[in-house]
Image 1 (cartoon, rainbow, N blue to C red):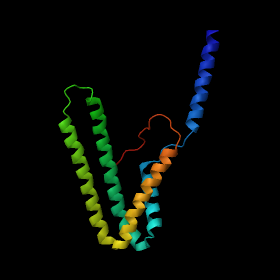
Image 2 (image 1 turned 90 degrees about the vertical axis):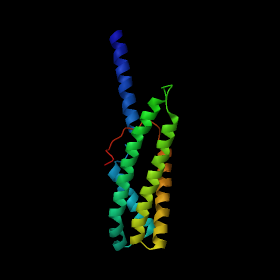
Image 3 (image 1 turned 45 degrees about the horizontal axis):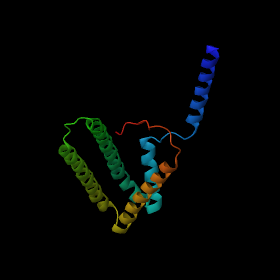
Image 4 (image 1 turned 30 degrees about the vertical axis):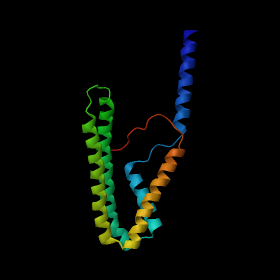
Length: 159
């Protein structure tokens, strides 16, 4: 009788794992996300081949820097979450760090902008930024519509 229970439990667990694994596709890798975003921007902005060739290295440099920055800050927020259990937590330091991260990200974007405006005409750059915002909205919509299933595993080094 015990073996029957264990066999049924094993079969049920195995079936649940199979069904759960088929519910949603895996998260795309970082490089795939960069490529999808780049293709989206090129199409929406209608970049010429010359503009595209000149802009791609700047785009990739910025994207990699942003991903690395977010990975580093993700570790900080995990640390902060664990630190919240400590009754002597220094909220002032945490708040200062949060503001510093925002300022660093703003400076990264400003440097990105300064490089892009040397390459693209103002109107094209406006469409470029608009396409970036639209891509983010579409991406958020896609993730929102995905079936939920546990926590996301980090499948890629942000480098």
